[in-house]
Image (cartoon, rainbow, N blue to C red; front, side, top):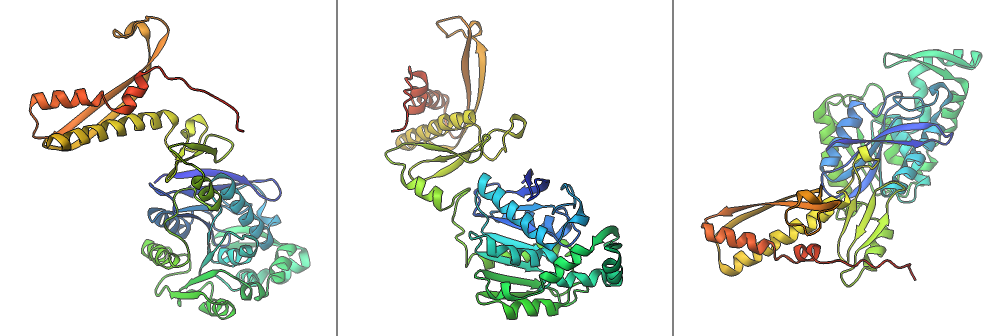
Length: 412
């Protein structure tokens, strides 16, 4: 499951860097992972949990907050409020290019940020925090020794996690403005709190404050021996496993890739064997609707696409291959042949007509589809030969060999 690199703009128009973890199959729904204070999207917790959730069918966007990791901007000019705006920008990106996120996951200060941002994201139905403080003001404890210096000199250099950062007075004042639990009390979302009783960075008392302030449905899971950063893979995978089980009570896990309320209504309008294709983004990602099914079509990244689905020619080959295999199976079952398995591999090329011995006109280029059929079973030579003849009789094969008339007309 390769990570897809994405970029989107923050409120100031600066470029934020993200990675989108997608399942091999359909996406149940999309989530956003907010990393810990001064960390990045590549932190162990963000990486482990996002990839583990992708294996369970959840698409997860993890990104660098402004001024951190590969994102543009100056960290010293950011604050907790800008983190909230970055989360809203990430949600807008998912909604525009994929589907609106329905789950927010936040680690440490990222947990406080997702709780605060949730009130602005109506599609979000559930929130998960990991080692999170109840309010942003708790972060001041990390540079308490420099607090007076910051207030007197407008800024100070502090060391956090082995790295040097400049903290400005506006950063501290913004943290203090987010020192209320009121937004947690008004949180109308399902909430799951993970916290380690051994956490030396954010006390488990903070988890208690969140839990007490929040309304039901709410849950608390102890992480036992885990450290604050979830630096052990088994702890991160445990979080992902429990999270997946918990979330199934609050979100529909049968949603297919890219499906939201709008796409559901679109699918219901497709009737009588028609196919509807809609834009997913302003590049090449397309939603394909039939009466009962949905899928994605796209182009590979090297062609400017996001590689989220088969390209148009691959879909064409898939149609021929599927029809070929179905036709062979129907014939073999009818004749009671000992055909155990069918594999059809297809490829498409454009060749010069002069290289095509069976072509009537020896000019220009012609399309050539090569179809290789593997038949497994106790079949004699005559049966195998007949099955290859039957392959040429599949309906899609006949359609492609017929003269095709395509009529294009405007929507009425």
